[in-house]
Image (cartoon, rainbow, N blue to C red; front, side):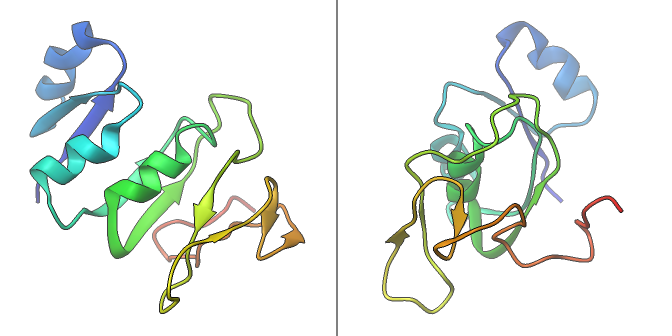
Length: 121
């Protein structure tokens, strides 16, 4: 298993490595590009802790049929702005207005639920 971890503070890279990360990525808003340089096919699984501002970049970093576990909302922003999502098997991405999933207003996750990533009850 290869562990990648991101931080916005370059001064924390040593502590992140000491905690067990194989690669430390400095979050400059383009983490997916850094992930794809290390893992060209994308990551198998990603833990998203910041929230909706970083979610589109997080989704770009995961492989096709990979898992994104959206667990954090440190940003306190509740809608994804200017997002483009595609469904597995679709010909391309489709635009959806902010705060919608498949065109319907929803607070539910737009991703299929994984047994490794369940919402709190």
